[in-house]
Amino acid sequence: MAYETSVQFADPLAHRADFLAVIVQDGAVVLDKEGDAPPKLDHALLGKLDAALGGVLLRAAGEEEFTGKDLTSVLLHTHGKLPAARLAVMGIGRKKDADKDRDQLRVAAARAVRLARSAGAKVLAIALPEQTDGAELARDVTALAEGAQLGAYKFDQYLKEKKPLKLLQLQLLVPEAMRDARLSEAAAFGVRLAEATCLARTLVNEPAGVMTPQALVKAAEEVAARAGLLIEVHDRAGIEKLGMRLFLAVAQGSVLPPLLVKLSYVPKGFQLKMGPKGDSRSTALALVGKALTFDSGGLSIKTAAGMEEMKTDMAGAAAVIAAMEVIALLKPDFPVHAYFGACENMPSGQATRPGDVIIGKSGTSVEILNTDAEGRLVLADVLAWACEEKPAAVIDLATLTGACIVALGTLISGLFSNEDALSAELMGASKAAGEELWRLPLPPQMEELIKSPIADLKNTGGRFGGAINAALFLQHFVGRTPWAHLDIAGPSTVDRERGVHPRGATGVGVRTLVELVRRRMVAG
Ligand code: BES
Ligand code: MN
Ligand code: ZN
Image 1 (cartoon, rainbow, N blue to C red):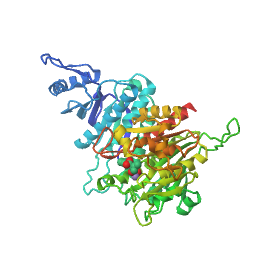
Image 2 (cartoon, rainbow, N blue to C red):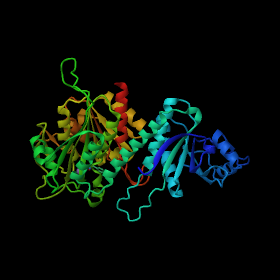
Image 3 (cartoon, rainbow, N blue to C red):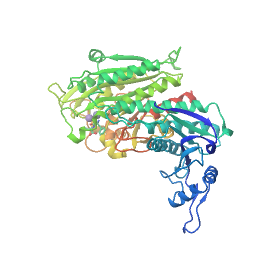
Image 4 (cartoon, rainbow, N blue to C red):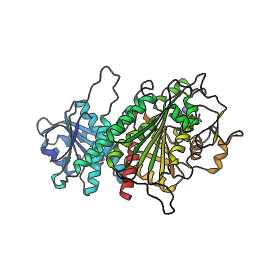
């Protein structure tokens, strides 16, 4: 992106920068409860900075009652008393657990970039909090580089006044005593992860008139070309040939033709490993993304308000496309395939009618009662296709239901899985990545809600438990493949700046998927 990220083994006290950010935990400044005694510093670096500044840091902290609580900061001009022109002491609150603490670093770095942005800084230095463990230090460096880059993102494509970021250099300051050549790589990885997340954000933020099925496929082709991935694209005739009539039923109301994509990473010299009984289940990971470039609801049309955000209904596909770019760099020793069926859901004289019965790829008949429950129809065919190759696991990401937002809110994605191990793997990966998941059940007792009197299934299950009956529907199309479904309808966007995210698309899912692949590589 616009600025360069580097790791420097330097003393913050002697380091020249436009802006120096020091991240501290709560308790770095101790205030006297009764307010009589002067505040004290309980932080080695802050003590030295305060001494260099002739005590004004401590005074400012006292006046602002700053102790290091989360999302608080103290800002100072150093007036030549430090090589850094400005200083920000940024609180991240109390220590929690390793994953949450690391996410605090991401958010702190994003906040530091925002402060540097409004100060017009060209060089921002962030001092790493004091650390012990070498492996942990690398992860912290990744988190800071990542958080900063995520915080710097702005979707300003269509603004006349763009106010570009002036930042040219982000320097992560590590004490000389912890010098480690691998830290540069750790920072570079954080930048890559964030860039991929920002790619996903941009695909989602683009209006639906621009981010058409064709444009989304072009974005996937560009990723394939950059990352050296294989790509397979099928047009309407190809989709018909594959028997994906549920997908076509969703697409048929739009004048924009549907497109089906398979993006593949295959390790060099990879051969399909046969299982012990000669079965062909591979070690491959399959990723599937919902790719509705616009969801009007079709003939079961949405309200005006309900439609406003529906350009974001391809956030699942955006996440898998972007994740593939980083996965290709990681070069795991197992294949990873990403699939999506891109189309629009529109009302027209050619649109699917409520009550139509369609048999898709798997042979299961579906009574389409509500054309606004379209995501599960496309996913049914694409999941069935992905599972034909018997991957070790298939994971789909979809902005599938408003009901999931009602259940879990806008910050947590719903996780459904037919396998506890895969579910646990995703929970762990998402937590480390700073993206929250909560597992919801797939109760067999609720199957009757999606039974149709005239077809094998119907595509709606009533008002209650809507996220669950959508997931139960999908489960019918994965057979025995270990499968997980992430309902990302809530976290795919934020309506105002939050944590590392500016208003708009978040790129949710990218970092969880990459972390999952990294963990599978280690587990081997
Ligand atoms: N794309 C929507 C789900 C959605 C809603 C995503 C809000 C993001 C924000 C999905 O296709 C949909 O319309 N779902 C319906 C299902 C219902 C008709 C069974 C819903 O959630 O209302
Ligand atoms: Mn819909
Ligand atoms: Zn939808």
